[in-house]
Length: 72
Image: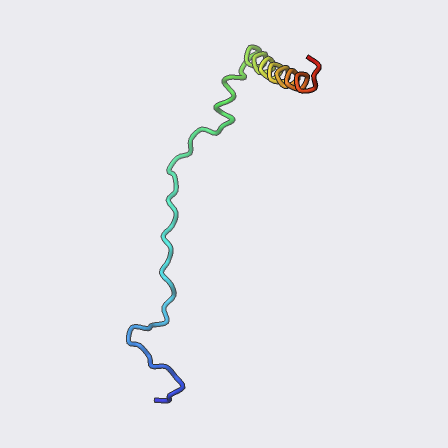
């Protein structure tokens, strides 16, 4: 054997690396987030409640800004 080449090994086959196992998939999807929100907005009461909550949050933000600016 030529001295410039390394010795071969008995178990040194040229095989591709092992296959990665597939990811686990869910069998059924849960309800989408939009479906969960729809019952709370159904009808005029739901929309009114949503508008009231939004206005309450805006009022709270405006109070914080006025307090930080020294207006209150």
